Amino acid sequence: MIPAEKRYEEFAYVLDFVLRGKSSIIKGREGPIVQALGEERLTLLELLAVENEDFETGEKLRIGKEGRSKILSVFGKLAYEDLTAEAKSQLLAVCEIIVKNSEPRYVAYFNELQPLTPRLHGLELIPGIGKTFMKTIIELREKRPFTSFDDIQARVGLREPAKLVAKRIAEELSGASRINIFVKK
Image (tube, rainbow, N blue to C red):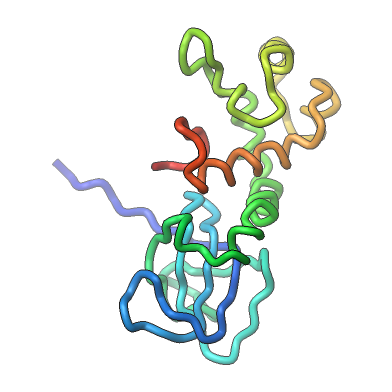
């Protein structure tokens, strides 16, 4: 059997930057530490930054094996509990940036989510979507798939779907949800 190929994040978004930080992953490692959220797999990551670089919250960084400029090393995955208070406070805003930058990927969830149990539909896990919105979304997507967040908002009447998806992702990352639809456990 061929082992599953390990997939790594190519890009991550800055949650927090600590100029003189201590790694919570590698004991004894210190330096400019970036806590970030991976774009593709929504992984919380700890990164070692290049000295004398500046970082903005929400900034998109190349962290793949090729073409890094501001990051020296990816230390590894972080647990939500290991995030700084600042990183936790920025998580929702950064999730929203990722959701908006990958709009087609997240709009597809509105077109594809299915029932999880006889009583619970995957759509209902997104904050703000109850039975009524769920039924409307299913009826409308059968007639014509949704093409954008604006399309969902206009046809369904669901306000700011990107924000609602971002809120759900932040909940899943914090460990506050039993069932995950966006974040792999």
